[in-house]
Image 1: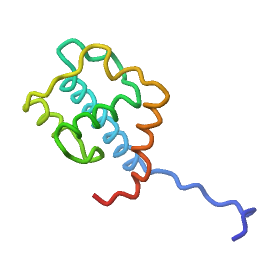
Image 2: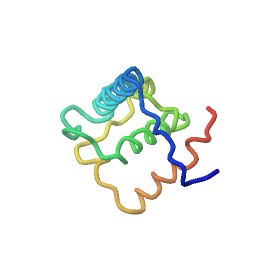
Image 3: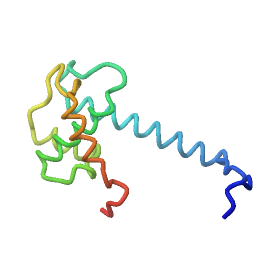
Length: 116
């Protein structure tokens, strides 16, 4: 293969872009619903959440329910809430030290290789 030959850039169609935007907005709505279920009333952080926070919530719910953390979704958060597990208080799951961030990042390793 000759690296010096220019290649055309693959552009997204309008339909593909709309599909991506719909998926993004659905994930944002699910994340907001998960936040509401995970925290006590009025204790949820305002606005966008930390990147690590959502993974930390999923890990906590996965441990409590005994499911794989990368499969946890809004359905599992609802189940977790119905079972009456202790909800997070204001200020919890918001600030993470370096070791905790590294541990959460290691959970993501190999995510693209998972078959289930």
